[in-house]
Image (cartoon, rainbow, N blue to C red):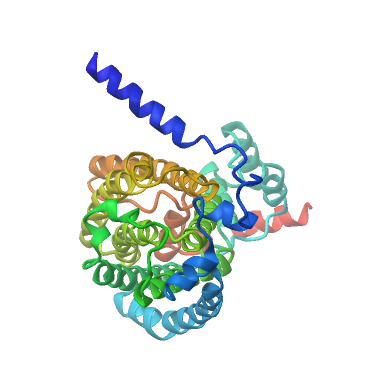
Length: 400
């Protein structure tokens, strides 16, 4: 009975904390601007906070992050060309791009009609007969045509190397900056004197660098290697940028800085695993991916909810008399981010199971189907092996 009562109290607390105060934006007794009513608790204004503490964060300070993002674009191109590319070549990573198959109009027409998807077996058999090819040759042609514009393995290696460099750098910086902060070990300090909490230059720099990096990711997203979760990653990038801007505007920077550290630490091992996979260092890949799976699960499915959105339900009410609209929006964004974590962990867990069954990590589950396999085939056999004989090809083209 006691357990049911406690669970009921927690549920009521969560529901109550989401109930917006009646008239919070239009109350006649509140002389503050609508912006202050939205972003801050009752009786708090941005002007007063900035006057009382010159280190109080103001959104205008983050315009510099746009310049940081452009600087990251230039730095990335230089790093990939002069550091990552030579290093990848030294490791033996292939720079061979996907080879397009020979022009066969009937197969290209079928490819367009099927919208890239492999046709059913009976259709493959008919196409093979019509082109004078075996069914295996038709399937191989289909995959090579589908991935004809995919980047080389070296290009993927360069992208992973750049991200690993960034995530390693900011993860180390984040731990150095936060290790002596009182809220790093005691989450009650999220809310002590909130929002009148000064923000030192190290945290502001942290925000500028992270925002700039995510801006650069959005600029590169359409030129980088496309993966299955392309749109999920776009949503993730926009959510992260929105959370960074919102947390800075409302001075939720203490939670925000912890969110950044928890995200960056696992990505270091993911990019390391990718680099090892592209370089065909299987043992290193397996080890790095195993560490990544554990760190991701612990950091994003255990520490992240406990230290962020659950804290806003369990601890924040002890320090805040009333919630304000920006706080509820912030919690909603944290919950959406948690949903993405759960979705990705399902993919990671499936990869772990597959790796145990196969005895090794076999590619990136987020990559398009078979693209890495096609790349490997092209590196080990001539392109012509997937095509019919020259006489049959001439006869087919002549009949069109």
